[in-house]
Image 1 (tube, one colour):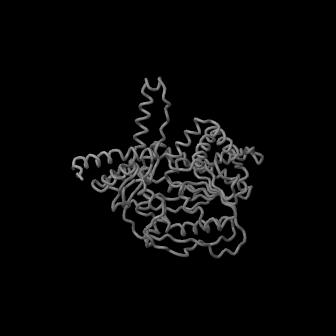
Image 2 (image 1 turned 60 degrees about the vertical axis):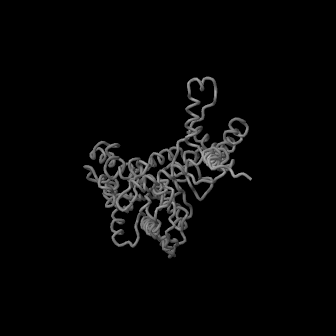
Image 3 (image 1 turned 135 degrees about the vertical axis):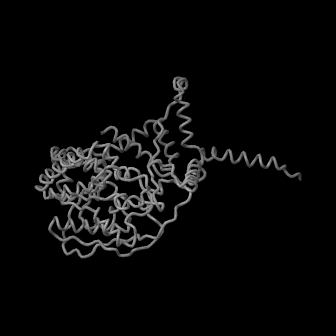
Length: 442
């Protein structure tokens, strides 16, 4: 039998390689890890004579193919790895590589250098005036809520640049900014008598003796090894404010490991590299509660940014009867199912006035959107009163899903989305319905 010539074999191999991305795009035969971060969805353009003539359809197809060609994620990760290893740089403009490979997010370094303050207030004097007014409004709301037995405690969560500025690159330093906005709020709270926990000086002292970093090299939130300390500090502050004992948060096991949880490597994940970076061993402690001599479990409402998420669903929440977490004062996560969803659609009066403690948690990046607008939310809730006509969110969402299924073109589009995103049709239907719900009920 005659053996095939070498040039024919090479041609077949080359054509196979060239056709593989097309085959992958159509069939998704290979499971490929998704990229971290956010990609803006492309608004679909229906084919028509008009869209063809004005080239809007061609532009849509071009953008769609750029975002969905086969093995795209692998090509991007390979390029990012090349740039990182060869030039010690990143293709993500929001990530800053510091000394000793310490990773920072630009949105936090901009606050540290004073850029964000200038963008929001212009001058330090203008910032101080606005901050004093915010604290004055805070005191008024605190006094109002006391009649319901509700106390507000503010938790100032320091950002990584405030605790580890020594690893910032030399070109990122403070620029004519004499104070940090969180440290100024801490001073104003102290003067006004607002109950608060300022973790900035606490962490600065802690890092001198702590055997492990308070923030991991590749994360931007406080490390999991720090969580038991944070949890216990908050619990004992609540005990001091409410006047009855709260349990202590203790480590039951340190669990040293190099396998980081998502929040401990979140900045690394956003690099979207082909290979993981080398991790130092850090603790992943198990938290348990000890020494609660009182049977009372207060109702806790948390209004905060993502710094609270590491406390959520841990033993910390076992110290409370009910826990409502209002992330960014927009989306509610609760131990009671009826209190989940967009807070605009919930009976906010009931949740706020039933809370024994309201914990407001924010870092310096979110200090400029003071309390995430929670003070205004309280005022509106008290105006609405206890008989606020709450929208049955779940009922409306199920109705929208029914509408989707009853619209053939819409339903087919959702099926296509589910395949592209590699999620179940049910999940994709719900995602679409929730998006429509939020648009219709803004």
